[in-house]
Image 1 (cartoon, rainbow, N blue to C red):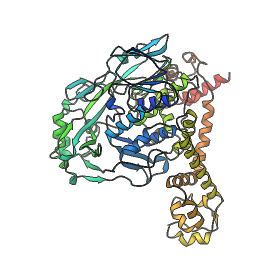
Image 2: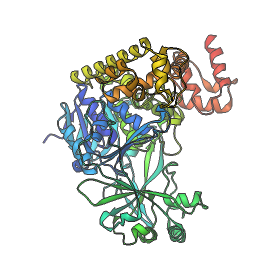
Image 3: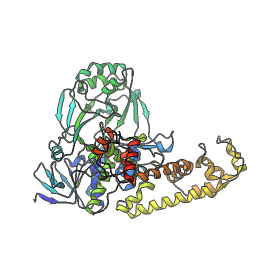
Image 4: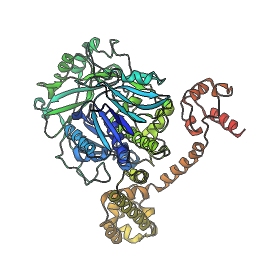
Length: 622
């Protein structure tokens, strides 16, 4: 067989970022090769077999709206779905699903194997081929050269990965999977900065050994909510999760074994995720707490394996097991494997453009955990953007960059390239200043036009999207034009616990009241009831949010438009920051290091103050 293959795009790694990147690039019509070490572990859920959660769920809906596949695969393989934060405002609502781990991977493989222009190659990347500062392709451990002008690296935790269980340290990217030992150096030798981060995962339990009577059952939702805008709901049997806690006896066992924890005996030097700490870190950080929550989650419909969320650990397996046996539900526990920690290389994301292309090596794109993020969703969002931009680069088209008021993915990438990371980055709603604009219900309104433009959304889906938008617009107009009779409304005002009307008013004005919803208005307004009877619950919910929060939405949109003016002021190449004495020392250093494209991007860099921005504005005017 010829050892030289030629492609337009090569994607290294078939995790969540790699799958989205390869699928997007191929669907956009460019010849794409996806390299994976193991065809049986495509889109492997290395940690929790769950998708979504706070802010992460919004990212998945954005991926789906753009034409990515994570939302679709989640709906196909979900074994429990929940919409989180429903007691809060709609900006905080976040979908989450527990998935069947094996079916999730199988579903992704089926998609990739049937995507035109996409070729799979089972191998391990050994060297990035670069000539005159431009990407040329990949050399593999089996002495195969794969050539392409664009390469997307989505290697996850495999770059110089090192596994820790107690005093045992084994090279590996995941448990029982080899580490990629030389590829990172082949990239860093070109001037791309690297660092080390750490993550971990908990013990896996044989469900037959769990006493579920000692645990609190947590059932999923059974309503119409789902992840993909283009599916019809969940396909698999829905299973319960379970809730328990640690106790003082557990903590005592773990404290006695703390000297053998690589996190606290100096064997692990790298930084782990702040918001997903190990059980050791919880005990160290919160010494006064006598219990910590545990979530026992099924891994699939055809397995007895359970995931113990909340008990990530790298302590010796004997200590992990002895500690768990102090919990009544786990008295007779049998485990499949202990928890472990993993250290791995990442690349400084401030050396990337917003397209996720390297500023140093042309044609090199980086996405996922190699950029210092944590989480399947954050990885997949980056992978999708990298895949789109690699394909657009091949076609000679302008890079696709989302603004911070367009998507959580845009916030994520902007944070990475302007602020960098000193610990694994995880998305939260609090990171987005335009949360009311970036709701999970309107991700398609915001982003599907891009998906259609790029060819990632087919005609049937495009027609479905247009029909939905037309229905929402029609229902909003109906609310604005329909008057509600005060006398008729007041007959039911007491039962729905709202203040009576003094005079008749428009439906849109009445719907603004917090206690008023379409559901309690339709029984007393016949024309509204008739209108809603022909509309899906999803569209009704989306329209109600738009009408009810119209004032807040418009105010936030106006503020975003003001910020866009700074985005229009391009400063890259205009300044030698080291020579601008009016700037603070920190600002000079940060601006010189990151070299931002626009004034707005400069303003988001930590250490660059408003007064520094004013200095640059004055100099731009000169």
